[in-house]
Length: 385
Image (cartoon, rainbow, N blue to C red):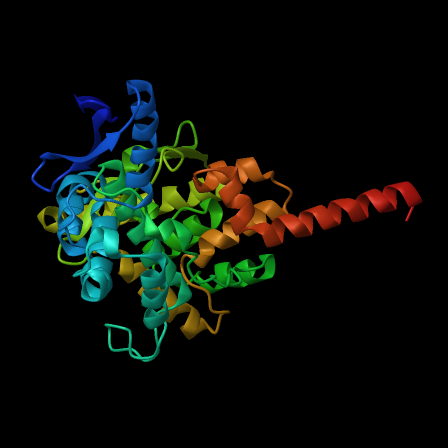
């Protein structure tokens, strides 16, 4: 809010708040005008406020992007972001954003600068990991969204008026076909798993039957499994963060915290596996770490998430199976549920998506096939074919 102060005969001083300096001091921008009355002066005040906003006048005109990023990091990122997200964001900031834009002042960066930056990121030699070529459109889009989020905070904290990223469209991401197994593929998978270690076999089939994320499988503890009610409570996850290590955390969102009914096949799997784990625990005695995790390493400790994916890749290659990722088993569960006629909302709840709209978007191919089949059935009913 601004204010009007009479300074003499038909003279008024307009004062507009422009947020805060980096040290927390409030900054005001002032302008002296000539007006016939205070009412006219207030009209000019409104125009002056709009001008300050439109010209993107910052609270601290000397603050550079690199300096504001540190403020954002200390006051927002460290406090609000999950460890894995925080680390990924800071890697993009330190590897890509700061080297290119860090020395520019916040209000100097315009849409054209961002467009040029994104173009450079896509060129050969732009990658910091030594790999050939530039960054993918998906990675560039993630960087764009991060820049936009940082500027949104700068605007919210009244350090700047306009977010330049809001007027820039990131590169279009070409959607990849989701890899999944068909019913026939699953039958082959189940047969191929018969002579595999029980832990790997159980984890793989549980992913197929429930659609759980890899991190959620690793986060399962035995008190999460209610054999009497025949349900699995999903409320924890295990992730790996470089420089930090394996970490147990809450599930991704409120909808990720969910309950899945146990089918007879899943119940039998878990009963057999639990007996094997108890026998192993008794055999190892004091060498066993009683972590209560359902899936552990050979000594009862938390598993490194990547070890599952690595085993699965070796397994399908060894068995000559169609190549999909371990995460593809989650897609398999979703696709088979939808293809079986289960409604999108129910599938969304089983998968723990943030909304059914997300499920519809991700599995549009399955939903389209179901709608087509439904119309064909209607046609056959009407025409007796």
